Length: 318
Ligand code: SF4
Ligand code: SF4
Image (cartoon, rainbow, N blue to C red; front, side, top):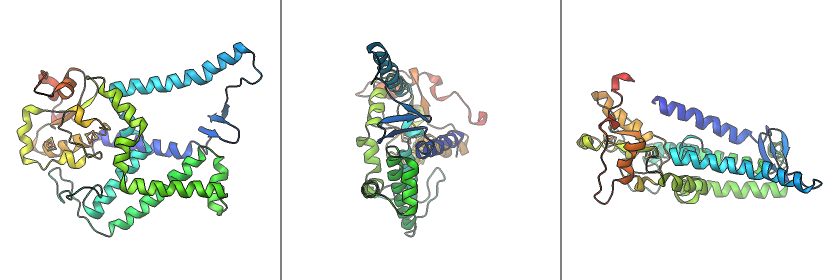
């Protein structure tokens, strides 16, 4: 695992833990009974019931419009510059997607049941997976566990977490709690098993929003491909494509990588292919002028790529 993937693992694990623990620790949740948010242990209300007009207006601006503007504005800025960074580096759904991908590959040789051909058991980048049918048991356990965990966690964002977890462990869920958890777990089992990539690609509003903003900035961070050395790919089994959890083709132009999550798994794969031979990866994250080659290259148009785009670091510098 390279240093980028180590950092990404850290952030994904930390955010998943935060996602689960935020309600029980009262860091962030909506209390359905009380009818207001709880933020860092304090009620987050508009407090306008008995306030005069001026105070009420100020409260609405400061406690509703301003936080929403900050979150949306921050999200737009991040997506504009870095694309779907949230998806690849934080999102608790994408963490489950990647984990189930890996388990399915151990069971079937494929990252999802919709793929026609299994991936090579031994890849050019050194990844070696010999599928065993017994691996399906682990897939089933993981899907069930994470579906239930997700369902219970979602409910704790709405109802008192101590009550939900307490009722779950003592087997005394109320009728409505039981219906919510059962229905949500069932839907998530289907989604995690059959449609997890499809949800990330087409079903998630947060992902779609980030992709649309990112597409608007032709100089945003993007996976770049060193076309001058494209012949080196002839000896490779497309390890970068096999590594992509979104099932994209990382050597393509940006328009065809609309749902790229900036996870950089493809870059790690290419490093593993080329660095043992003393060569640099053909893929790397590029931005600004270098990104134009990926963003504008289409319909016969070939923007100039500065020579430095893929030569910044030598292998021995790492
Ligand atoms: S193209 Fe590369 S960075 Fe984008 S999702 Fe696929 S592996 Fe991750
Ligand atoms: S870009 Fe790298 S990993 Fe992808 S096919 Fe070419 S050499 Fe292989």
